[in-house]
Length: 289
Image (tube, rainbow, N blue to C red; front, side, top):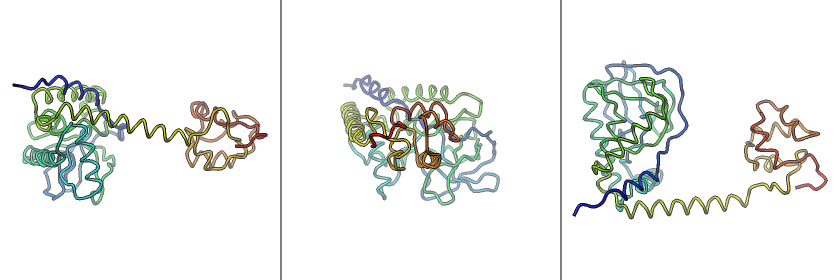
């Protein structure tokens, strides 16, 4: 009997999308005739290419493919995260589908292709670093869309407007539609997604976040006992929401203050930041914290 897929779909929608802040919005450069360069660590979303005589390591926008290695702690942590996202009982399935994604990319990029990149730097362990890019196959298809459609990637990572000028929010909507199709059709890694596992993983993540939030609150400054703006230490100031090491140093260097509003005189500190800081500080140091 065919399993009802709607609970799976519902759970997937609850996971939502995990986009990060847009990468560089600099104009995209188009490079044609790009070829894939074989490398042991190439995977579905990150791979070496030869672009007009220059070797680059590309990182795709919008997607994250399953890991292909469990050699390091970082790899294993990412495998656990991806296992939770897809609702898999077996963590080994992550690596197996990661290898499938890498094989698929090798196949569709066997012919010269086109990349669109602004050379925005991407995090990673590749020698020489990685740059974000959109990849268009030899027959004009977008690689990111293909990976999501085939259930070989999750929607996750840096975003930016597409080469055609589509806003990143609309690109995300397109990808979400493709993901729904992949889930319903049990494509790729979604073929092994288990509704009960997915639900339990989600529940466990919520519990962990609540515990971390409760623990962090113990170290937050008090609004009922604001700290002395003219006497607080750098470490105390850094505990205030919106205050980092640089701002804390500026606050100390510009003492004394006659009013909390005097903080607006600090370079780079505007009304919005003051609104965050104000409840936690005072210039009345009669009762020091």
